[in-house]
Length: 94
Image (cartoon, rainbow, N blue to C red; front, side):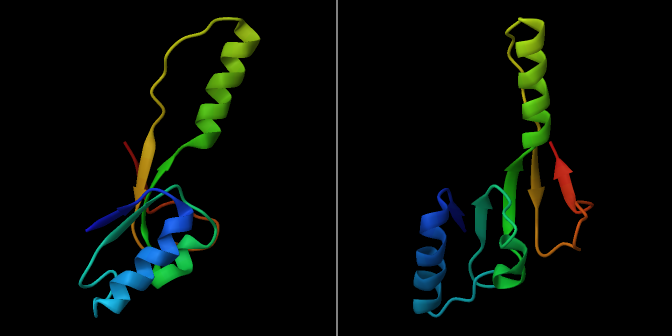
């Protein structure tokens, strides 16, 4: 199991996994941070952990408009594999 933190390391990680004769998603798992438009198509979909950036922006805007700073915990989601275009039904937020 590999956890990838930076986008720049993802290609190298996939290459090294394959160089060892391992099939990503079958012999070795890869978890990557933050969903991007390309990730559903890499290796038939990567498992990703993503932050709900829309909610984060709404909370930040509300704090600025209200002039009140507070601490919030933004939900994050775990998605595995490819998803249908325009849907997030396979994302579970925790």
